[in-house]
Image (tube, rainbow, N blue to C red):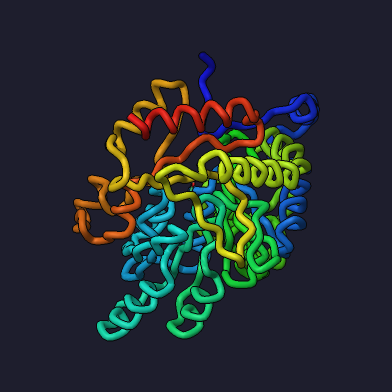
Length: 389
Ligand SMILES: *Cc1c(COP(=O)(O)O)cnc(C)c1O
């Protein structure tokens, strides 16, 4: 019995050739392939600047630093995300709070955000940054979140780790119309991969410069960024801020650039698979992912919710039956505030009821461009068995 995974990368001979070409070249890192990949992503996203880094987690960290997040500041995000969307604030010495999800889209709920902002304003505890996460690749209600940003004066970092290639109101995710910085992830389960890797995108020249410095030790070789008299030789560089080694390698960038050429095909194929699931699963006691008319999802994930009141087995039983049938389903996500580390910061079960209810019902079923129709049929059959028992 072959195992069907919930997500997996697609590596072609062209990808392998592109990586081998870099291995045979002079620059394994900090060479020309990084800039080519950055330009490629910037072009598809419709944005001025793209800064490649070694993970989306690093991208989130330097995005927060570039926006001056620090001790005494607050960052708000959704509890229904990977821990990295919240951890970035703690790296900067700032504090984290969460806003519950919309029960239909599973994304950060703009209504709940507004209500929480009104209360926070009264006690002088407004967030400096809000991080909306485009869960499964379906964009958040960015127009509403942006309008609240204007009203309450917070900055916006879109965690688009699931969403490269998706669109919001007809425009590409990452174009910066509704946010200061957008983050992509190129982890192998995501839409395109560089093994490990991420990118931070912005239209703001000043932010782009800061992101570039933070990625590499805070060091510059640009005379216009340097301080004081510069009469040393051509070897000279200056460290002008405290940065990190968050650089992507050219080997990784070559893989990313080669994958990028197939982005549109990947997203179309993901939509085909979603369409087929809609037919295969239509009559089952589960809730299929609802798609907002403003959104063209990248469909990183396909999340179903069990209608537990209409079925005999428990969520866990359905999940385990799928796995023993060779269908490696998954669950995105365990609400971040219920993690032991976050409980120690004072959060508790019951704080975000919609995210917690979602967690008790959700299952990510296989969704990736190399999934075959026959495999999809097997997923449908296993789910029918699991639920019917
Ligand atoms: C995968 C993911 C990240 C982290 O990405 P890395 O590239 O692995 O650091 C952050 N946020 C979300 C929503 C993710 O899915």
